[in-house]
Length: 325
Length: 271
Image 1: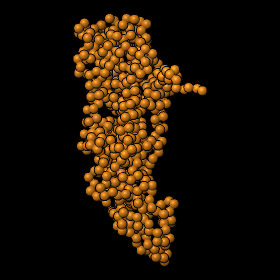
Image 2 (image 1 turned 45 degrees about the vertical axis):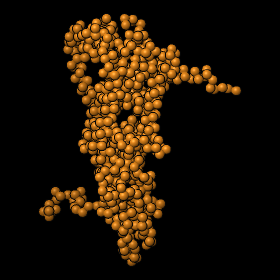
Image 3 (image 1 turned 180 degrees about the vertical axis):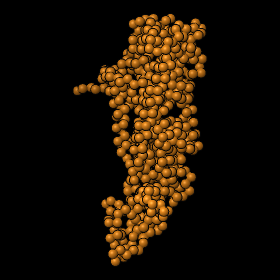
Image 4 (image 1 turned 60 degrees about the vertical axis):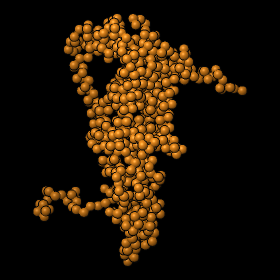
């Protein structure tokens, strides 16, 4: 008789699920180590949706509405700031409740990191992460290059279109809203748009949607550039240059200044989603979450040697400085 | 850090000093000269001139404009609302509604019946917006209008005083050929189920082709467009239907399209 759940089989399966960038850490520190923050993120994404689903499923009304606007425990209003901004551009006069909801959300993400929405809340992240994982498994390398600033211009375009049409323009096709709303209220033929995003990320462009096109992420990125919790390359002197963090990271350009620069240890770019893929994939514990205000993380130890180094050097400049050293 | 076999450096854009500088020299040939790299490493290594900057801004602004125009056109097509879909009670007019509704579904949750839905792809309303189809489930006209009170954005009027003030559309007896009352029968189901009984729909005695009939007659000032009549019409396809007021109602006055006001001497003089 065959035994599918033997220890060896489980090990083999765990090894098979591990993507290449995480395999460095997985072989040296174990599967759980290399997926610890990833597991927490999936748990967080599930729990946020569950919060909205236990109501319709079991009659336990913890949260009503969806991510666009909601009511938590019958009191606390929450509202999506990007949708709110478009509504303003469409010349709708907001009511106080919506403004309170938006302020609460903006304050929350100013605290935990703007694009924490992307990596810890948004269900499309699961779709695009899966596409990225499958790319790795299938060895697909085709990558139609897109400028990562495209999303900023899609954002500007969405605001312009809101003004021109007098509607909340991006919501007419936003896959991010569509998926969470679809899961909570029923998705119907909306799966088509989600499938299109998956295909884009799998076959056309590496991390095409979340890291290049999505204006929702771009908007949260603007908040993230100022937010308190940031990833810190505190132990960067321990870096072995294995490259795992760069390969695991959905926005690899954000790592360079903190890891290879002489300035702050913090990853300050708003593009960073605080997803912790770098923390998971680093087997020598270079990265950890830190606070923007903590001197330990913010202060560059190298300041003593090179006081003139700017603290927010562009990636290539930082690298040049490193190489010229 | 000096190790040239370092995999990180191979995986990323050129980082060695010489590569960055040669890139910079190439840049100098085709555009304005930049200050020497020494002492201004940040600026030099990016090799980014004013011309590049203006080019990028122009290109990006172009992309934004194309995105805006494309989205604008798409929305103009998409928001042509289907007459089948009705908005919840208290909805502000459709133009403003789409600037206010964030598609959160709080009205759907507040609805005690299975009436309100959020539109998904293929539904007869703009993606994610709340609607109902009267023939499937009409608005039950809750006295306290919980759906409107739940709206966090003002897309539904939270201060609506009475459900009878709601204007979801207007009921119209669209098909005289199939309506049983027009065949001389006393079906009158639409009249009997109407929640604003004997006010929104009355039965009017008429003599048609020498036969006495009672004809269900909608009074648009009383009708809220709840759709109960449409839901209960006994025919396979309802002879009475709720339509948006713009489709369902006429308006007294001159037909501007049918009779040109200018370019016709006779009419102009009459004016």
